[in-house]
Image (tube, rainbow, N blue to C red; front, top):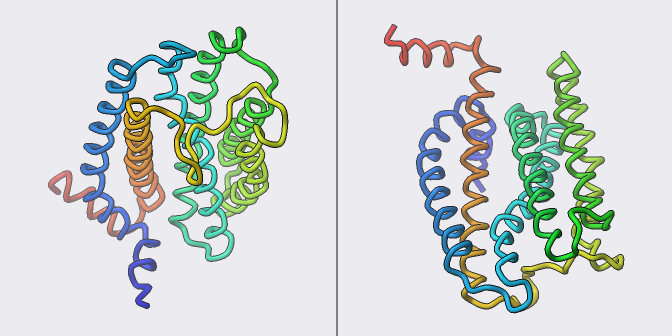
Length: 249
């Protein structure tokens, strides 16, 4: 098997030039998917037979909740690559994913609280799922704060990678909390092993919305990584040449 592609992908210079071709497509597809999924779900999907129209926040809550955990798992993967193979681009990805993941986690908690008010009669309960999601938000904040507190880039990369891997234990707790404990939070809306219980008119806009949010994450991540690469590689010849070309020098 030819591993040249993977070695090139670890190069900041090669990634920067290749990602410039991905970004317009990711951004366009993300915008179209998010608009289609949210408009369909919020305006045209039928009301739920039990929750009425209050359930519609699911089209925001579920994608952000999915991404809150998924982004942290991606960070953990980047942390392993950083510690084992010392690939600079993996640390760039980890650093850039943390603020995005924390935003999704915060949005998931806010939309969950809004949904919980008409469903449970309260904005917040110390439910196992909610509490573990709050811990996840603190883990994101911890990685971001640790990065800013350490001046040495190499030491910061290792410390953030270790903290990220330590926090991975919280992900299965989030995933299985509704099964391990008696919680107010409902079970999984979508699973890979069971047929969805949702009506098709609700399921399709939800799936499209989830796709749109994942594409949005990809577009924002690529954009942030490109900016971080330019910042880290600003003294290299290729970045200086790139800046000179753009300025017409």
